[in-house]
Length: 208
Image (cartoon, rainbow, N blue to C red; front, side, top):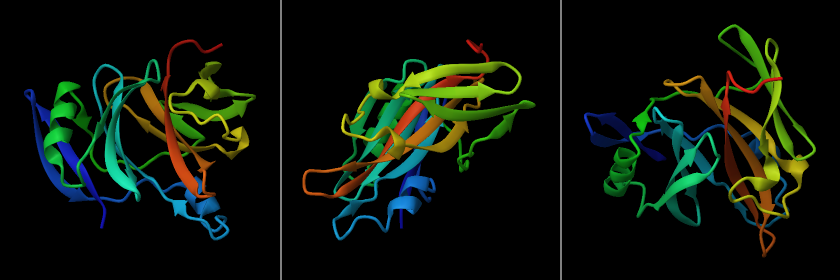
């Protein structure tokens, strides 16, 4: 059974309880789970937590070899502004404090949306051109939203064609989405690590 924090921000306080939830359904995992060739396959799991009203997104990454981490990412700069190592899955104290500090609102059991997708009567899709992640709008044009080589935590020996766009979640407060990518990293002992990256995208500005 997998646990995730149900954190609801209200009047400056975080009320935390434990819920039994499933992580996002990973395309990279489904495509790669049988390709470890006898080596260990570290199936890291990604749990969306929520958004703030000023472009922040919080999520938990759970690793079979380490304690879970609560991460707050800035969807404007794509920087990780806070990382809190949690003692275990029941560590609500540290999680609550961090979510309260950044005014993260838990958004409930929302499913990851796959591309292409219609948002506000416009169809969006994404693709990778060289090292750049491009967001395409049928009505507004397209724009570069990230250079994948510069993503915080990006492993230099990743093969770019191994990265998959898992999908996105939409902020309930802004016309902004968080795009979740995943890829495999080969460790020193031949093990495969499933890693996740987040990229923010404004749905209104800078299209050409």
